[in-house]
Length: 409
Ligand SMILES: Cc1cc2nc3c(=O)[nH]c(=O)nc-3n(C[C@H](O)[C@H](O)[C@H](O)COP(=O)(O)OP(=O)(O)OC[C@H]3O[C@@H](n4cnc5c(N)ncnc54)[C@H](O)[C@@H]3O)c2cc1C
Image (cartoon, rainbow, N blue to C red; front, side, top):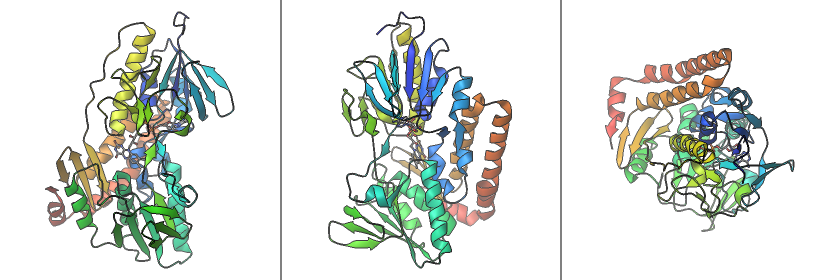
């Protein structure tokens, strides 16, 4: 590796939470190339709200080319097909090979089907705004065709599965044509979070057209049915896959320690095998593993940039002081939960906190857009939020409902 060259060649793979934050903090004196398969940054934590029309795809996206060019760096809108840590190269889908001095892997996680037959063909993923728009349009088409009942199955009762269910109930609770099933291998919802949260969500959903199926191992997904290892099956008109994630396929061949959870890194966010390869966000697994959260990816991205700048300047690196963060989980307009360790607070008012986090970060990330686009973006996001979420929620909130649903679990 030659860091004596005037400019260090830095490649960043992935420009969402971790990657874009890092890119915004890399020194302008480097030769920085940013690669992402998507054209836009996407605020993933709120994509489920597209299902209920509370958000539009455009209000969750920021154009990457504009932001990265204004930062003085180069953006390539392509998919990376492989990397070679020893040769220090990145290969793109069009077979172009790029050389780097320092690489930052910030490509998150992708959908995992656990090798289940038919899952990739017949179940929708839930990773990007595009996935959600397709689901939204297909549900509307099923309803237009007067199908009765319409069976919607959510595979995976984790964080994402619960938020998906909440948005579907926000929009369709009064439409009795629709029946929802939530299916999970585990014995309850949100396995990684306290059991009392699962209990409360199940209690809140009792009066809706939802059935929960726990301890169910799926063997096959077909276009009209889902099959289990106990030989039972369930009818489906639309199947949503929110069951699991893994590292993107292009990292399969990488010569570093990896698990399905992430690439092993030290506290400087470097891989053990290649000191010039840094990893941040969902793709990274620290010695003390952290949850896969946007807020943690933002911190890691910032830290990776600090250390890459120091690495190029041949200065000592700084360890990341990893911190867990609270989680805000929404169950549509039924309730919102704040979770930190074993503490779980529930209140419809917390929906405004989740919305504030989204508004704040989108405004901050869009600071690099031209003024007109920035102002229009902020205005659009505020108008949609006020009209579709805040006003609706405030008008619904009678003191008794509010008090009844606000509690420490
Ligand atoms: C539906 C949903 C709801 C969520 N809700 C919350 C929440 O409420 N709170 C919270 O904190 N977290 C939430 N998360 C988790 C959060 O979104 C992730 O932790 C966060 O996105 C991780 O950021 P990242 O930058 O590491 O990866 P990502 O945001 O996944 O970004 C990875 C980027 O890499 C790009 N990429 C991947 N592979 C390639 C390739 N081969 N070539 C080029 N580019 C590639 C992708 O296009 C993407 O832009 C949610 C996630 C989902 C899916």
